Structures are given as C-alpha cells and as structure tokens.
Amino acid sequence: MTADDRDWADDYRDCAEALRDLQFHLDAELSPDEAARLVAHIEACPPCAVEEDDFRRLKEAIRRHGSAVDQTVVARLRARCDDLLADPTAD
Image (cartoon, rainbow, N blue to C red):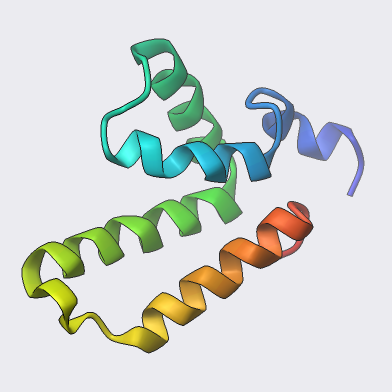
C-alpha cells in the first residue's frame, strides 16, 4: 500500500487514534468539529467503518440485554481493537 492509498487516514491523524475517539463519539462526547472529522475518516476508511459498526451493535446489545451480551462477541471486538492499535494497517 502506498502513501497515496492511505491519504484518508492522514485526515484523522491515524486509525489507532480514530478508534480511541470512537467510543467518545458514540457517547456524543466529541465536539462537533471532532465528530465531523471522525465521521469523515470512518466514511473513507473501511477497517474503521467495520469497527464502528461492531461498537454500535455491541452498545445496542448491551442496551437491550444488559449483562447478557455474548462474551465471544466482546472478546472478538477487544482482540480486533488490540490488533488495530498495534498495527493500524492490518486488515
């Protein structure tokens, strides 16, 4: 992958930072400007879009079922976040 292929990541510092801010975004704790930048990054970044979808579904499952969330989903999400934080270019 060339630097030109990753230009969308540069718009929001990097994927690891975007993922760190994702939870704040989902909890409506980012400023409007920060939220807009994050959303633009997610719309242009397929790996971050997948993570956003997973986080949204997890939050919805927790809201619906409380502590009855499937722990395999939680473990998969945590492992994926750890992988992306270690290497944001990982698929």
